[in-house]
Image (tube, rainbow over all chains, first blue to last red; front, side, top):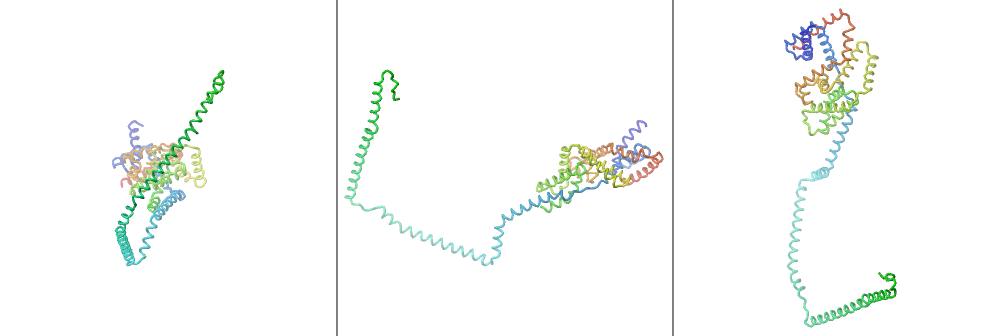
Length: 213
Length: 200
């Protein structure tokens, strides 16, 4: 086989897929077919390519078993059910209320709110009127409570009693101070100091032996 | 929403599973990928464009298959499965069908052994019959790239030794010179028919 025919075989074999797909032009198809008619190697290669291609095209379109998709269906079912449950629980009160309202006749649906509003208005206005009357009555009572009547003699007697009480409290205060200072603080301190000095004098040889500290 | 989701599953389940089945060696892996893809569809249902569900599913399936292939290690199990297929075919069919069925089994193995994107594009185009536009949108590459990868994938498939040896045994070495010339004449007739059909 010459070099030119080798290169021709190479290009023809490159075109095999194009020929099988029908992508070659008429001229290219003619060149391809005439070469394959005459060349046994290219004819064999073409035959092999065609066999493989036919076998690939004949491969079955397989499908999966149902059990493969069951978990997916369960997942989507459960999530959808969950969403429905949550939405239904949120809207249940409102929907029930609306259903209840819809069962009531129209004149009741309008009349009851109007009557309730009228009664409420009357109650509010009456309470406001009562409050105004109470305010008018209470003013002189407050003035009377603020200014009680006392005689000057009673006031001077009260002042004398107050001074006596203050004197008594001062005397109690002085007596308490004397008691605390002499009996519980000064005298015990003096006694302990004297005792320690006395012990120090008794043991001159070893001054630290009877050191109270 | 659930009804639409179920419709989408019914419409695309075969395409997704078929793609995974011809891409992966183990049936369980193909089933896992199918489940994974449709769970992701449920999770992203609100976000995706419902007019392009097919392309979206194939893209997700392609990514899931690539992940599984990375995890997959060539093991003895696959060889055993292949041997089982051959044994089963041998015990159930006659001589001619054995060759045909074994050839298809080897072909499937050869497809699975291709690298990506050759494998994915060959499956999408030749096995599943998807259009170039669908493949383009699924893999996010241009149409010309799809065509180039497809032709390279086919050539790589034809380079498979096992397939070629089987073809040689069936059509080459076992035949005498006279039968070869008869085959050549028959082939030439078929070639003319193919060429004419392509002209249409």
